[in-house]
Length: 220
Image (cartoon, rainbow, N blue to C red; front, side):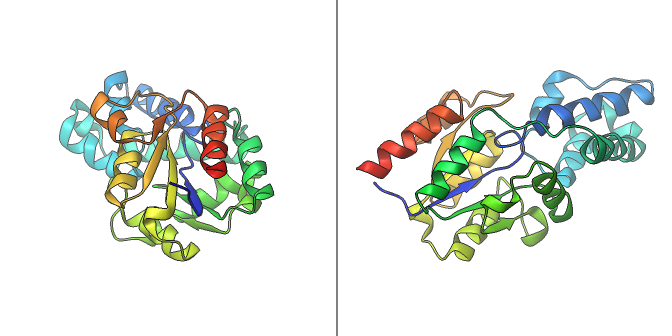
C-alpha cells in the first residue's frame, strides 16, 4: 500500500544521541559513587526524560540517588549537546534528501521535550528538512502512547493509515502501531522482540535499507 507522508523519530534514528544519553547516565551515576546497569539503560531507550525518571524511581536500585542523579544527567547531557559533536546516523542525510526530491511530506515525532528537540535539530542541521516537529511538550501522553504520531499526522493533514513511521525503539514502534500507522524499525541499541518485528512493515539494518524499501513502496 502506498503512503502519503513519512514520520521520523529523532534520537537513535536520525541522531546518534542514544549513546550520548546513556553515557550521561553513566557519568551521573559515577559522580554519585554508584553505577547504572546496561539492562537498565536499555529500558530507557525511546522514553522521554520524565518517563526515564519514573522508571528509575520505580524499578531500579538508583531510586535512593534521585533527584541528584537526574540533575547530573541533565547537566552532562546538555553540556555535550551544546558544545560537543552531534553525530548523525549513517544514511539519514541521503534519506532526507530523497524525501525532499520526491516532495514527500515529513515530520519529526519525538519523545524529547520541545526546546531540547529544537536544539538537537538545529545543531545537527536537520531542521530545514521538516515541515513540522511534534515533541513530548506538545501532547498529553508521550510514547508509547500514540499521541505524538497522531498529532504529527494531523499537522501534515494526512490520514494515520497513509503514514509510515521510522523508529529505532520498541516504545516508539508501539506508539506508531497504536496510531494505526505502518512502522519500519531501524534498531539502534536494542533489537525489537519477535512479536514486535512481526507487526512492523519491516526491520531494516540501517537507513540505507529503509530508504530502498520506501522507494520500492513508492514505485508500487
